[in-house]
Length: 342
Image 1: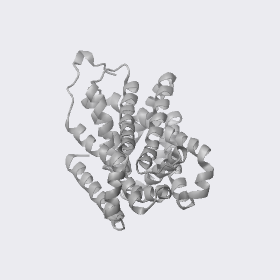
Image 2: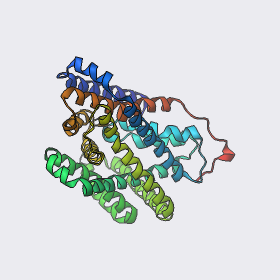
Image 3: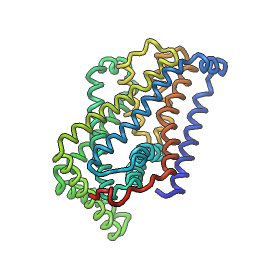
Image 4: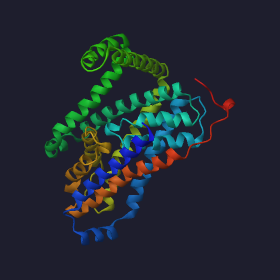
């Protein structure tokens, strides 16, 4: 993604977000909104903000673990998660996150090959933990979901199916690369209808190369179970910390009746649902989903919109703007003698 594309998607994201907020505010009582600003418990909002900081720091920690024994500059590894969030936040289906992560690692002194390998490792583990986190939440909160969330059942099922299919494809590539290559060749057949043979051959070569690279990465993970378990546990903690953020936002606006377990379950559902919206950050779907899921804990529409606005600022817009800053503050490269090439 070049600079023009990044600028376009960033302004497009802000435009869609502005439309979503304008639509949400059309029934808001401005007087009540001002009163809510003064009545909010900002101590709980500070806790929510600390949690999102922990979320990003844990991402940096995961990268550090996966990169061992390669030495990376402190700022280089710290800025990379924010760059990744910037890429995720301004592109549909978060497709820009991984390239930004690889770029961040490259600027931190990590070779392109090792950066790509680590990025793939992190992606595999993250997808796995999302599915595991969902089933953990379903185990403890199934009855609540069954009784209250019928309206979003199809979205939740579709979301988990997408994540499970991605995970299944990754596992297939890990353990059965020859079969995966054959399946990929079959999938490419329709491309001959609107692309030249030369273009399809180019796609085929790149695809097969990625399959081989991914298989090599999976072998590295399998050969280091201690690192795999450590990163998986940190990722699982990271996810549940993120899922807890709405709970403290609800406490901040006076929703003392909120149950942390139910809030986590609802946020897992919300995250799965908005991941299938083909707009940056699930904009539109995220705002509507939050209002639908959490309004029962709040006294009126105005308080719900206020809580939703705070939630989006903390979990989405904060990452975009800090990521933009991180992207423009490039770290000093490590000395060549201190950098361990893969």
